[in-house]
Image 1: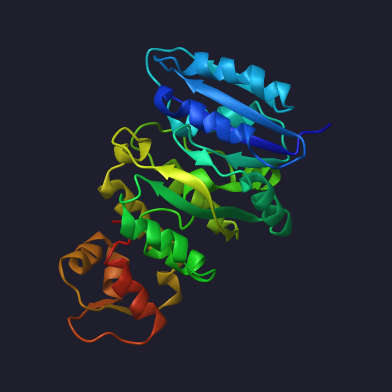
Image 2: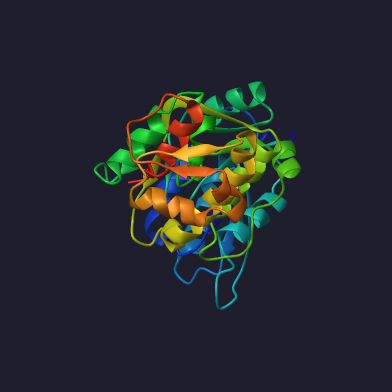
Length: 298
């Protein structure tokens, strides 16, 4: 049968978490044809021995396993690994998974249902953080955004409004948007793809069930991306997608972050900007810029 869903799993030195991650693939309650596409990015631990062990169990349960990778001295990065895992897979839909995370049993089934209804969207889900008390404010934020805020708060967040390890989309739409940036360590490949997706008119949908255990630990790839790098991309996207709609705009309550935003704008944008320290206004644009000066991730 033609594969319907490919689980995309890049792996780099993921030995401590892989057993639990792969068990969660086996425990999916989706009954259609599914495959697991693993790409090993120069792991030096026992990650691939664990994958080979699980391949027997998964294929015995009807889940095809495709394994690729390289053993170069250094890893090529998350963007490269995801692109390679996608290229070697065959499913009509792509379910992204990080090797340190765990899927809940209904994840593939429920997100596939949503993706079929929204073919030009990235479909995410609510998540549960591990450890539970890590990034409480950020986790609450990503789980409670309304459907409208999934789009409007792209200007105020430090990352996509649905987190990358929860993404699910059609292969056709992924191909339309383009591959992940392969710049390697320090490049926010998920944010850059998310912006490209929005530029092409893509939607953002969230399944309002907790379908992913999202781990927080010091060696996570996200920690390699500098805050200044994300800030630069955010301001560029704001100038490209929002500011052209306004002849002038105001940054209210312009404290340290507000002044930083002003200094980060191009000279052209600065000419249309007024800095104020005063009460909040009720115009959408002013509120958006006020919120931009208060990053949500925390």
